[in-house]
Image (cartoon, rainbow, N blue to C red; front, top):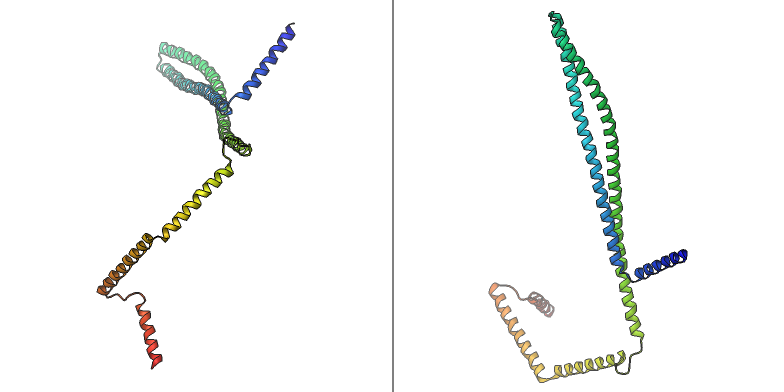
Length: 259
């Protein structure tokens, strides 16, 4: 019984998922996928930032420990020198006190050296982890850029598919039989061509009318007047009329031939 219910539940889940994928808008699903990829990249960067911060802290702690180690070295050396000077001066008490101080510094120095070695190991591990985190972010960034480029390609392909579907629908509507209450394309074409022919005929008649001829005469008169005015201006400026030189040459040639 339980197995049957489990199978039925899985079947219904698959069916609902299939129906959803069929009805869902691909553009919305694509945006969801890209948004999720960007969110994953953001979380990866945050984790990498924490790893790098840990590495920086390890470096700072190691640097501070090395400075303290150097200071202990100096103090131990100074205590030994002061003990030696006290011994030379014959002050056994001070020599013993400085020797005890030097021994205390030496013990601290040994402990600090061990601590520094441990810190060096931890710093190396933290550095390695930080480098791996940086590499992971860079790799994921490249993958994200590829996904964004793929998104643009898919959106363009989706738009082309939609336009092709619309074109197919339009072409299908052209081949469908037109109803009795709707004029056919041929009827509309004949009507338009008839109106166009009438308009062209009326235009030709208009060109043949007295008014149109009067307009031509008026335009010719204006042209002649303009040419006369241009000739007057050229004469005042001492400019030869266009074609006048050729005419003079032609007249001279004619005279010579006559002579």
